[in-house]
Structures are given as C-alpha cells and as structure tokens.
Length: 138
Image (cartoon, rainbow, N blue to C red; front, top):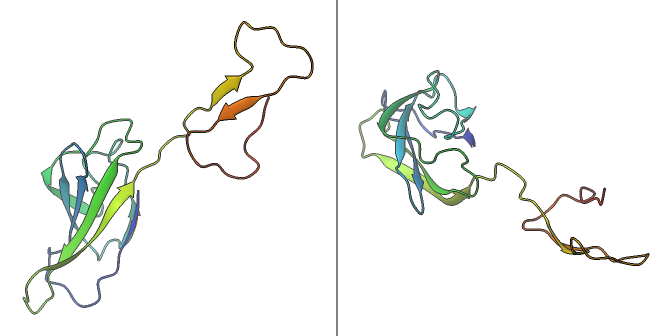
C-alpha cells in the first residue's frame, strides 16, 4: 500500500493520524504519522503489522488483515489538527483494495482426460483484468 499525503498548513505536534478500516471484516488500525520524517511511504498490513516504526506509532488496533491480504477493501482516513488548535479535520478514501497476487486462470477446454484431434480450441476465463501481452499458452 503506497501512501502519500500533503498537509496544507502547519500542524499541531503529534496530530497526524492514519486509520485503515476494512470495509467488511477485521479490525481497524490507527497510526500516528510523523510528517517531518515522511509524507510518502509503503506499508503492507499483512507483513508489517506493527506499522512503520520510522514514520509512525501504532495508537490502537491491530493489522486489518492477515496474510494474504488480497482483495481486502479499506477506508483510508487521514486526520490532523492545525498548529492554531482549530478542530481536527480529515479526509477519507473508500474502497481502497489491496491486490497482492494474480489469480489463476480457468481452462474451459480442452478438458482433462479427453482426446482431441488437431487442432483443438483453447478456451479459458480470466478472473481479473490483465496486462496486454501477458496471456500466453505455454
């Protein structure tokens, strides 16, 4: 999960909080982010469940998913308070989906254990979108 953010004004110390909430099942995790260290980082909630120690402190919760995290949908919320002490403000992006591996294709025909004459027709279905030039019969 590549996370990049911009804070539009000076902040109150320790007020930047990133929360990931699974949209179906699981537990949210909230991390205090230190924007003086990083405003862009990569985090995998399955392999780095404690968050990124260099840029964050876990405030509450636990990893929002276990391995594999594939197809888990999240709401990503970033909040902060300005250095004048005004009310906390936030923004959210919903339905952020982790896609961590390529799902296997299904061969419709030829069917295992069945004899075919030459040439035969290969029929298959792909369970997700693909990159042009990557579908090959080997």
